[in-house]
Length: 146
Image (cartoon, rainbow, N blue to C red; front, side, top):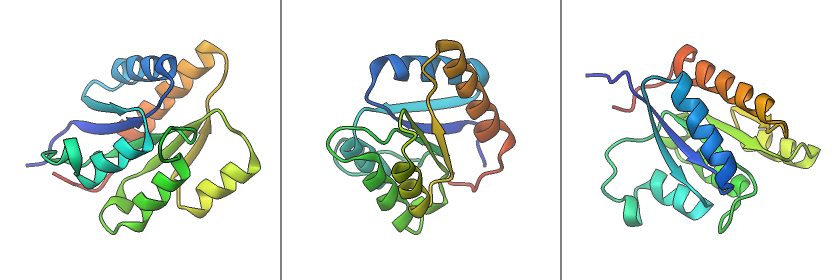
């Protein structure tokens, strides 16, 4: 049986950004299950079901990934995800403060599904998260991992 719940893995080390992202996603995504990790090492452990995440039953339907994260940077996480035959099917949305051309090209070369720059202004950031929630968890059709 396919679940109507959208599972989101949010990889974000900035507590203020994480709080706003979670609040906005939950506001506009009624059936969201959001897991939050703060570094690349934890993201990979979650996705590859190792360490403390060994017992995880389900993969996320969407990964929201910051580039500037501790331990293992976002581009490396992205590369590992898109190199795996199962994980590569999961859309990865880069949500970062960097608009540097090298970062955009690096994410594109590693098959990011979307690259979004976090606005500095609160309302713009909240609106961006509303659009992300609506598009990726309600409008976009996804492969079934259940």
